[in-house]
Every structure is written in structure tokens, then in C-alpha cells.
Image 1 (cartoon, rainbow, N blue to C red):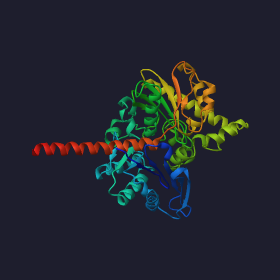
Image 2 (image 1 turned 135 degrees about the vertical axis):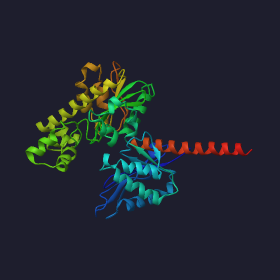
Image 3 (image 1 turned 90 degrees about the horizontal axis):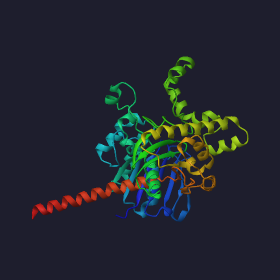
Length: 406
């Protein structure tokens, strides 16, 4: 089935989109941002690599989607794939039906900032393109293979059985793509034990055995885990009661601080952008230097902890904006893991940046790779798989019916 898929990722005030076909180099993509304001606009890359910038003042999600789809209509996408952050206990990509949409809605308390925006996009595209098959691909689905000892919290049982309080994990499409691509390049497709580090403004790690997630750093929400751009990652849970008792902060203020004012930004009191921090550190900024150090140390700790879920370690994949582009962060992180037998080639490490794919170890010990992620490509692949499966099932039912009529 030769299929081009329109991938949609709706945020609270933005829409990322990509038209994905077999030829990645010809991909059309962009971002509708500042939706609901006079500054709303679409920026991206269109046919032939030409830049696009289009003002859409005061446009909401539906108007922005109408504009995007109108510009792409002559490309005739055969399906639409929606990125959905939280699928609850859904374990795979699903064709959008009233039942699946309701399950996405039911998972909203677990992702209150993300799922409502996804539902807005789903509602708009289903009204605009009712004839196209539409599929939801969940960030959490890849991690549904985790064993209970990895996803259960040590909390009263009723919180799990009655309220679904457990570890779900996120960035699943990225970890799935990178581990599949990387293990194939390593000559062992979906075999062996691999650690993945998706590093960007949002960061997470994952342990993967024979192509399946066995543990990951994020939990009930994307706040748990490693240090991120503005998210704290792991902190003592009692920080809530400490701040409430001593500073009079309410839950909203504490949550906002942990999600939007912490991480690299909070540590450095300067920026959540790793490039800015590295430059500042080189110029003697001590706060930037400690932010980088904490980031790399906590990342190394997370990778070391997740290795407990693997019978053996065949290698490590770096991905995401920081993981793909910062040789300095890769080297500093690995320096905290000398006992794992990694042997980094400084020359190869320093050569890889700006989306370049390659191996950066010396050939001794576990392999180390930089694998540019392709979440849109993975979403498109899973969307096609769902559509093809439905076509095959329909053909089988038709054949069975015709045989029964003979």
C-alpha cells in the first residue's frame, strides 16, 4: 500500500504537521503557532524545500487545520495520524472510533495539558475529512510492555486499581523508532539490550530488550525522571508539603514551578536552551556550569538505573535535539559511566551533529550511536499499519462471506 500520511500533533496553542511519504527527503512539514492570538501564523517547509510563512490572525485550531489541509489537499493524503500523549492502558495505535475517542477523553486527568488539545485536533479533522481513515498513535503505548515491578508505585493498591495511578512513560514513538533503527544498523534488529536517551527540552530514557520497553524514566506524567529544559525531573515528593508549609504555596503554584520554572532554566537562572548554557559556561558562568553538570549526572544515573531491567547491555542510543547535536553532553554523560565499559571515540563523537547518524564508539565494549529521531515517520508507519490491517481484515471477511455463499 503506497500511502502518504498527514501527521498532526496538536498542542494547547500550536499544531505541528508533516506530510510523510516513502521519501523522507521530500517531506513537507510545519508549525502553526500562537493560535487564538493576532500573531497566529504557519511556518514550515513546503514542496521542493521552499520556506513557508503565512499569517493567520486570530485563527483557532480548526481554522489553522483548514488552512493546512487546504494547502496540502492536492497531495491527496490517504490517512491522518494523530500524536496523542496519553492513551491510558491502550497498548497500540488505534483507528479513531467513538469508543477510542472516549478512552482518550477518559485519560485526560493523566495528561490535562495535552489530551484536551489532541481532542480538539481530532474533532476538527474528523469533521473536515470524514472520509479519511484517522488513527491515534500514543506516546504511552510503547511502554505498555513494562513489567508490573517497573510500572507500579509503592502506594496503596486502590490508587492503582481504582484510579490508574501507575507509571506510563512517554516519548514512546521516539524510543520505538530510535531503538528499531539503531538495532537494525547494529545488525541485530529488535534484538538484545539497548538504552536510549531522548534529550531535548523534554528528556527521557528507556531500557529496551528485544524491541520492547522494559522500563523508562517518565512516570504517571512527563515530570518524573531526568532533568529537562524547564521540568525538574525527580525531586523529593515532600517538597510539596515543605513549600506549602513554609512558603504558603498552593498546589497550582508548586506544579507550575516544577513543570515550567525548574530544570536547566531553574538551575542556571539563565536559559532552558543547552546551547546557551554551554556558551555561558565556557565564558565562566558557574550557574550554567552546574546546570550542565546536574543534567549529565542525573542522566547517567537514570541510564545506570534502567540497566537493571536488561539481561545485558549491547549499546546506547542518543537522540533528540541535545542528544543528536551536542558532542559535549554525550561525552560528559558517558564520563559518569566508566564502569559500564563504554569506549567513546572523541573524533567520531565530535564529527556528529545537525541530524547526522552514526556510531561513536571505538569498537570496544557496548556500542554507542547517535540516531536522529523521526517521530512523525514512526507515527505515519503505525498509521499505515493500522489502515493496512483493516484492509486485510475486510478482504478476509469478504472472502469468507463469498465462500459461504458458494
